[in-house]
Length: 143
Image (cartoon, rainbow, N blue to C red; front, side, top):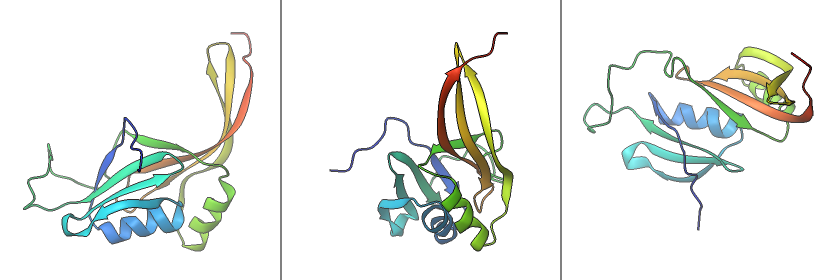
């Protein structure tokens, strides 16, 4: 049986087929299941999960305001992956520009710094997706 995470964002999208092309073909997610009649898909990438639902004005969806692009303003979805390079290559081949170029970043977390190789890309509706390859930990510098 497929195990669902305790927190799974559901993203409203304008075109499910375009979104699936991005999330599956370019980022490497797999479709866990979908309901095409509802414009819905549940995706998984090694435990990182997201739901996509196509906007339908007749479906009684939970929209608190009209959607205008870019969607998801103020949020980015960080997703751990084994390696960022193959994903960047797929995005480049598909002509998808990066929102933020790949770089190594170290973030302080109490007494250690957590390293990650990361880049950001926008999905077809403008959601920011940050793909992260873990680099490990090191002692934090004194403040």
